Image: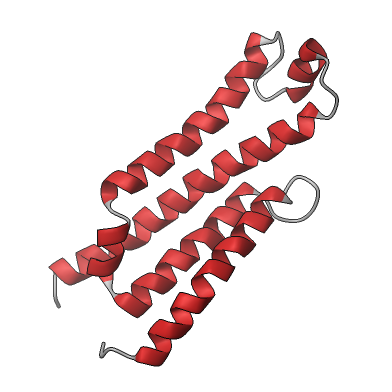
Length: 144
């Protein structure tokens, strides 16, 4: 693809707004439509847009395999950490009310739901980006 200044400029302008909208979907997933999975996929589309506009070497340079693995692991640790914390407070896995009851902090359940949604969003973003980068990488390695 030839370099196109208009496409790259529009991409640079849209990517932050796409990522901001993804964070909005993740945070408001507990009280409305959306959530971690949907927000993670929207966040991954911002990296796909960068891939289309700037190419694989640019995206791999900014968001390499080690970063993708770190984000996926971080999201899983957040999700599992909240679930295991609920078990430590004599509840079931992801039974937020157990923590709220044990600590006596009102409305802690909504915060815990948002933290879990963020962990899911981070994991989904990393996995979807990894899948797309692997597909594109295979296409460039094996020409038809």
